[in-house]
Image (cartoon, rainbow, N blue to C red; front, side, top):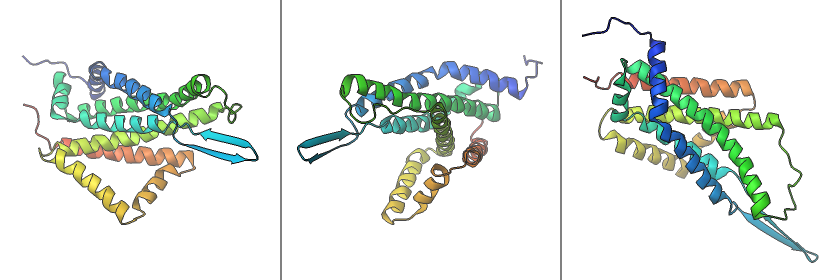
Length: 249
């Protein structure tokens, strides 16, 4: 017996999004675990140096949030790829839905994951500083009076969120492409890694220009537009690819 109730696309996407928040709750707990591990690794410092002059010895240790940032970026890419697998796509058909609603709900989920990941990544840097200040370097000399302005913190959070959105959309497109053929999950990563190695060995400035296009943009509006346009194109590409996948029977 078929239902005569016709649900709008927005309602379907909302229900699927709510379902995925519950089904993928472990995604957010894994983020917390990864960031805690990254902070622990960062406690050893990311570099040190020393100098000696006129009976005065100065030793400096650099503590950065790089480990947290890298692991968070890998986290969003890996999970963006994981939700494109056949098993996860079929779970999305628990409700009356189609490929479009499933992709849109996935995009919303990745958007939320990017927001939470961006906020926690920046806040983790403050947690690292507190731990180092009170438990590691009990007598710091340099940096004791350094403070962040609220505007700087907000800018850092927004920038991190948009970088994660960009990486999440790219990972989602890449994951969807690998579903076109059973050999592609092996071939695509090899091709991507091979291209990166080849570009690096030939000293090509492609990677530099690519990173500068996003990373060195000083205009906030242009930065946001670049990220949004690129991410939207990636999601549109993923939707087009998903339309070629075998429909669930």
